[in-house]
Image (cartoon, rainbow over all chains, first blue to last red):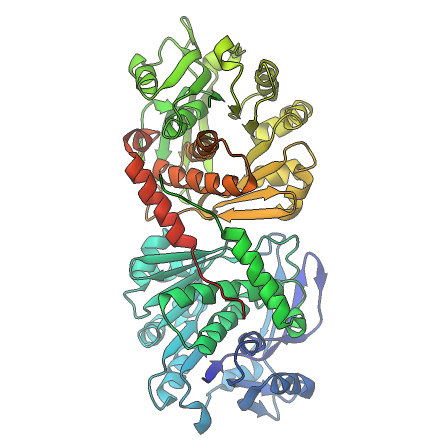
Length: 307
Length: 307
């Protein structure tokens, strides 16, 4: 059961109240691939990097079974670079630098072997690029999940609406859901967004957990209460990687299994934030993942015997 | 199994983005009593009101089995009055008016019949008054739950620390937990607060749910995602009333049963916010409560089969 992952592979420089990094490896597709590869081996990566992208990072992904045939290496340009500084609450951040570099030319052509994938994860990208990927598939995938951001709502809303009409699951945060719908109440926002195309909507609320909406059903997954959030960068992409990784592994896209997938995504995200960048994701084992999943079960289990 | 409830019975005037009330009935003990009386009949109310407090409101509580022997009626003063305006997010509000009136003289003397109660709910009040109530009990109650607020941390921290050392469960919101502990992380805040006296700490996060801490255990209860929060006034006291009402009904103060009690509190609070003041609480039936509890079960149930 193969999974096509489309997104950025990039350098990030991060400042938090707890520390600071020089350029480290980041990008949405990096986080999704490191995470999803814990669950399935057929991750087919679609991205673009420059001459400066470290070969050992590509080797690391290959060693985890990630297929890099869809990753274009541009010999005369630098990789995408982002730099940001988090505020004390770790929920808000300022962007210091955005150097698109190779990303300005990103026009992915899917290798033939990718075009029959049953699962597609579209990281946050120009909506037209997301559409182009879907159009290159030989048949409609079993499940298409997309991320996006407020920037595209401001500069490319018409394109974004077209992409929305082509996908199954939209993954956004609470402020993006409010902006996309024009509704403050997340329940009302969800109702509107579910008329735009996606049959499932996941609203991520950071430390406050995530909500899954489908028809009139709603499911809530908490975030694990942590002593310290060291670096939130990539937590949303890690969540996405755990979510779609679990679904692709189990081949079950029912609402019930999506609930489990969200818990898996939340567990993976809770590891991501423990160290800078994807560092922690590279270390954890299947036993670590199971231990964390068990913490989620403990966190929300209760017994109600209706009188 | 009797429950002593200590707190205010008051008038509130409320403005929200959705509407405005003149003086309506409010006060912490009012919300606790309306809620807890769904679960147990022996609610023993301790409060103070003025000549202007409507007799029919007192009759309403009596009809629900609430014992008002501990409610002092001051013939020549007005009842406590609070007025506030909520912001669009409904999580923040400005206080417009606080007229203490009778509350300035509140020095509760517990009727003899109250002094053997096994459960005590101390609403947000001057910490010395909370202490005085505990000291009037004939024997140490099975469970003492207290609420407080940031104001007492600023003007009466030493007294507050004494009260904290005398109770079992502290119920506060996230900003109060941060202020009391000096820690931003709620997990770190909880560890510190649990050394101050309470063996259980509940941190209320409004629309983001509530956390229960005990030793190294933690439980998370979501808030029900609602289309509209009409008026959040009293939601915290309603939560407290559901929590202690369930515990007093079941006479079981184990951590496991506290989890259930928090879900009961959350369900009751989700009704409270649907109308102004305590209006909705006066209407709901046992069947309504069960239906809402079932929604909570649906909201967080998931199946994890560890690989």
